[in-house]
Length: 310
Image (cartoon, rainbow, N blue to C red; front, side, top):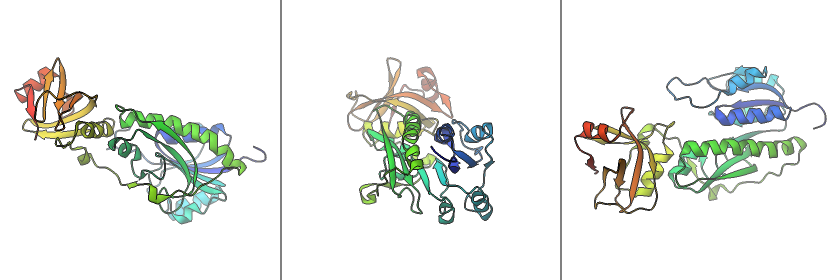
């Protein structure tokens, strides 16, 4: 890269933010400012700190509640950035902010756009039983995840992958993608293509209540829900006469149910679920009030080793 390094402002959070910032540092960019989030005390923080990485590299860090506030705009303008990058930053960046960068503003999104635009794309992809997802670098505009595509990197979703497993794959894919396409952006050689939004999809955020299991659904659909919200996410659950039972892990393979109606029961030391479509699902991790249940604890809690499901 000839001449002075490009001046960059980065909006980032989470593991993808850490890897994204790491790539920009490795490429020798002049990172003038990191905008990130304060950790939420009510959220399970299982990921690395992009703020810590910035501090190690003497990059100024700010954590505004609103990135579009006047004082933030003034600070970003003062950096005179050639480029803005957003790596898993959780707030929308407004038009005035996007226009500051001389060359453009780019976002890294956790899906193969235009599929799964919007919030928590990894969880939605797993919930819908997708066999592939990926990461996309695209030019930012006001409409979310709708700007011209620069590049994408696909990853497989295997039948028993949880959303957490898929997210870890995407973190590696994000690093590969950025190492490949950011140098092209810097050289002006990246080819941007306009996505066909009509061929894609858009999804909103999810709430803990969305993890409720409907036992009238198929074994595959229930398994997809369980693995889409498995820890470190809030987890799937259903209510019984003995309290709320959390289903924090499952394993699915083509195997016929033993009984005729939906139920969970213990067999050979394993917790099984017979589902409404005649297929069996293994529940690998169950709990009540966060306390794991083995067969003995289940029997003590419910007074039986089998529960009918309605």
